View (cartoon, rainbow, N blue to C red):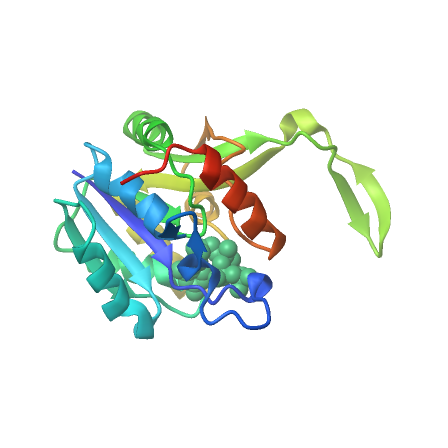
Length: 233
Ligand code: CTP
Ligand code: MG
């Protein structure tokens, strides 16, 4: 049994434009709000059995109502997140304790262009290795900088830009998150949580289209991609 967690509990501070009434994941891209795109990809995937959508307290009802209008015959739980992404993931994992899935896949709602292929590749990776993340190689040269001055040119061949989905055995990830809470350890993604807990996290090839909307200019790029991606129902 595989469950998916769709993270939509952030405030989108870096993307906020004057006049925006809601965080980036609720803005419209093409014919859907940003979060609905990956939701539909998860809802349509045959190997995802259950979906947790994690959001802000005042968005729970809106999201539930919207999901009721979408084609989805899976169990969907809408829950609230925490002050950090890490807390949102931990709270979402705890919601799944009773269901106790074998694998859990975590995806950022701010990455609209999740595909069936990416979900399948992630699930294949987690079944084989126990923990994996989607990632892409860096096409630009990456430099280490201090005070605006380059101190090192990094070897591009050893660098990967990590995206979501990230997936793991549910028992590993829950334990790693609970341990991180006890140890007061703060990280930016679930791969780092698993690395800290001593698990090997395998990289699965992602896609440049799987962008995360982070800055306002990413919204225009996402609109452009939405117009060329086959629109879902
Ligand atoms: N997220 C979450 N709970 C939080 C913080 C983030 O569920 N407390 C989610 C966001 O909704 C997003 C994903 O994690 O889908 C990736 O985070 P990021 O791009 O950093 O989004 P925000 O934290 O909302 O943006 P910012 O950091 O600019 O405020
Ligand atoms: Mg953030």
